[in-house]
Image 1 (cartoon, helix red, strand yellow):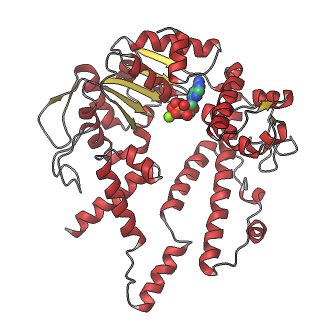
Image 2 (cartoon, protein in one colour):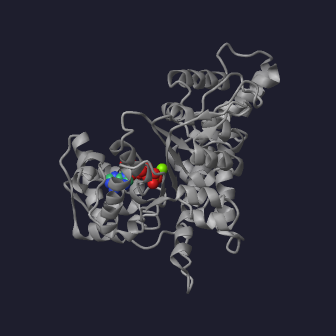
Image 3 (cartoon, rainbow, N blue to C red):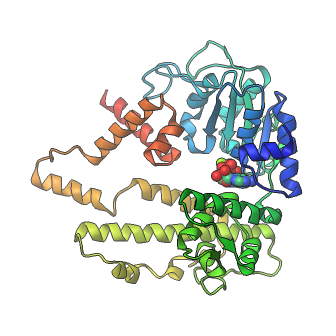
Length: 431
Ligand SMILES: Nc1ncnc2c1ncn2[C@@H]1O[C@H](COP(=O)(O)OP(=O)(O)O)[C@@H](O)[C@H]1O
Ligand SMILES: [Mg+2]
């Protein structure tokens, strides 16, 4: 299949020499059995490329099993990948096949491979070398014939240097490396992708297609796209709902671009601290940092809103919310300037996960208190119970596939794993 047909078939848009090179590599490698490592920032199209490799290869009639290694808690990853025998770990109530068993004769896409803990790395290396593995808690050796396609947004070479990724595994995995550059390094792809998204959204909603003004084109091309094509798609979707006429201009785009305010200057959220000698990666980190801060502020605002609504339903209007939202600059830097951005990012994502899980500021605690006071449980199932039922149902429907179940439930895989873990822990505690 020639390059254009491949792009057409998988919806991979772009005319940059970088994207052409990627497609050519895909075409070549698809016909082989070699394991492939796809590198690139988040949102550049790694999963899309993995699908293309699988679909163009001899294994296309067998499934492509997609596993996000970064979403699976460390303690579960081995049993998820390789399966488990009864009693192998706390709460394991049955024998379960792992993803490698499911992927036999097909392909397995190991996303975020850089997040894989070392013990799982050892098992994976063995699979790569001999196809052999055993379920957790079992002694029988099994054989799998799964083609491995891995992806990472980390610099695995550096992870090896830092001792976080096994060197032997790195060499095994990187027989073929496909690197997808970020959008800002292949600017000529930005407009074609944006226009194609706009076109298909317009078709979907049965509205007329929109044209970009010259200034809008310039803005899109110059923007740094820290979230790459995924962000480009989101911006296209959000923009198109704002546009009434047939033309998309800068004012339609600006509100959706990070760090670009409605007036076109840097937003007031966090001033870009453009230090002399700051490198591109410094600026990238700054952007990422700002995105996280923004997310945190939004979550805090939401939490406040929910809390107020719980306390006095009907009392919250949009305006009070806006008035009571904490001033943004206040939450931002304060003593953080010199702290390592990495640490802060880790903190922030951890805090976000905690926020998601601990309802200490919100309704749940008040509800519990109310139940205690009344001395009787209501007849309705608790939220937690209902949630667990739903999770169990989803898992059953998707035959234990956690990725699909999470999608159907509208929660992240990470959250689903945590909830399953809690359910299992409670089950063992009750035994
Ligand atoms: N070149 C491209 N043309 C069209 N859509 C793309 C392209 N690259 C990525 N996408 C789309 O962008 C989104 C993110 O891609 P994905 O493969 O999930 O990125 P990654 O795995 O690198 O995070 C998906 O919706 C994908 O279909
Ligand atoms: Mg991805």
